Image 1 (cartoon, rainbow, N blue to C red):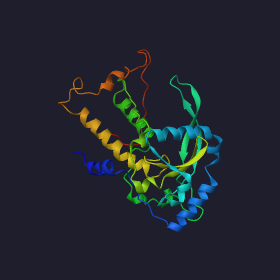
Image 2 (cartoon, rainbow, N blue to C red):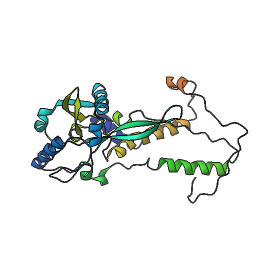
Image 3 (tube, rainbow, N blue to C red):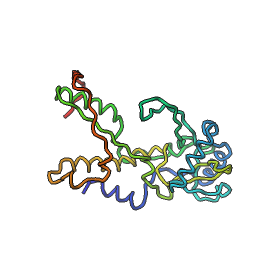
Image 4 (cartoon, helix red, strand yellow):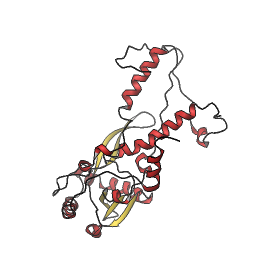
Length: 264
C-alpha cells in the first residue's frame, strides 16, 4: 500500500479542503457585496459569450452548482472571486499556432473591506508538498544525462495528460463556498459554486500533486513488476495509442555536454 494512501483516501471520501483563515462574517458580507457590485474583470466582460458557454458546460457536467443570484447574501460563508478570460497562443494538432481563450478564477483578488484574498489567507505551511514543479527543466536535464550515458541509443519520451485534471478532484462543502463566481447564463446572472478544484486556487497544485504522485509511483512500480504481463493485464485504451515515431536513421545523434547537477 502506498504510504500516502491515507491522505488520498480521505480526499476521495470527504473531498479536498483548503487550510484557510476565516474573516469575520460582517467583513465577509461587505467583501461579498463589493465584488458582486464590481463584477468580473474586463477581460471576462469582453469575452462574455465565451465565459457563459464555458460555465454552461461546467454546470451540465456537475462541476458547478447553480444558485439564484438574489440569494447570494443568504448563503452561509459564501465568498465571491472575479472571473477573467486570458488570451493565449495555442498549437493545433498539425503544429500550427492559433489563438486560444482560457478562463481564469482570480482567487488572489482582495476584498474591499478585508483587504485579503482567498489565496492570501491560505496557511501554506499546512499544504501537501508539491513535487511536480519545474518539470520541463528536470526533463531536459535527464535527457542530456541519458545522452551522455548512452550516446548511441534512441531516447523515447512519452507525455500523458490528465483531461480537466483539477475537475477530477471534488471539494468539501466548506471549501466549495469559498470558490463561488458570478456569471451570466442565458441573459441572467447566477452564482456558481465550484464543486471541484478551481483553476486559480493556490492550494490546488499541492492537492492535485497528491493524486499525480501516487499515480506515477503506481505506474513505476508496475513497470518494475516481474509478474506483470502487459499482454494480458492492460487497459482497453492501449489500442488507441499510436506507434512511436523516430527520426530518420541518417540523422546523427547529438553530443551532450556536461551538466552542473548530479543525476543518478
